Length: 257
Image 1: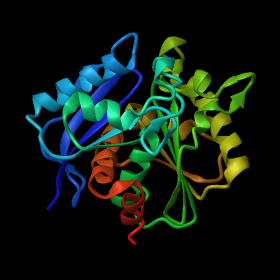
Image 2: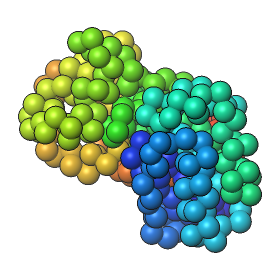
Image 3: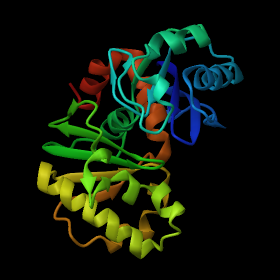
Image 4: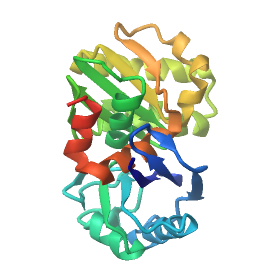
């Protein structure tokens, strides 16, 4: 049995909980703190350290980041402060917490968890995980193997980043009806289907708990579209899985290899 701490950094909140990585279950109620503004490296690392302390955690931890992460290095930061770009995220969080940490893209972590324990379990072919929150995160799997750091929320739709139109934040900011917003999501998913031809699209993020309000309104997609089974906990679980085995091995575990 492996118990590890998963920490999921988002544009508006930072969530954490200890995870049993053999079952994908949270071992305690998750804790959540607001993402600081400005979301600089020192400020965000301070929030992460506070969450670690709240659990009295001394073991390994996995941490997600909303941007491209390669070898622990932060390459993009669309919804956090731009001073993150070029920072060694693993070293920054490790120094702040005193822990051995693994850092990976937030949507990739959520996808790993859903492919192992959730809506993508046992699925072959092309599976696309999309997290609709402050922005749009994406995780692409081909026969269970992750194509990391895809960041498909930044493809252009009507002259704007897709996440500026179809994220949950865009719905709230524009006070859009579920029907109006579903039309935007439909348009976005049609673009993704044209590019990738997925057999399954998994919709994650907090809005996945309200899937009955918009999934039945999607009409332009041939792929099967389902809500994430783990809802907004998937990133926490995937982060813990990566801390246990490293990102590559966590992906292999998700694929049953």
